[in-house]
Image (cartoon, rainbow, N blue to C red; front, side):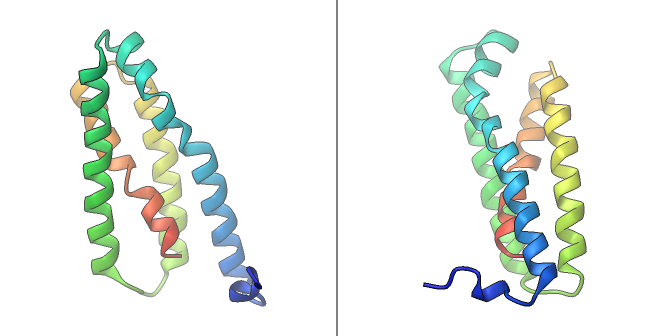
Length: 120
């Protein structure tokens, strides 16, 4: 099995994969900390955690539909970089948010980011 053969000789693709790995590695713990946000920040229980997961899942489904609709297009690398920057900003805004509806919106917008990485 030659795992790196798909990107051999294509530095842009390798850089995009590295960027996607780092962003995913640093961003996925957000879902791990959602129970803490639900309980300690919003003073709610498992119902609120379920709602937050539902918003994240709905965002992922919508993001998958958008990525499938876009297909391959020029300047995908630049778009991936922009999406990763926006993802970082959304994570920061979510961590600072103390308003429940705003946190739901941020979770919905953050979820499709991981799908954009898989299309690079």
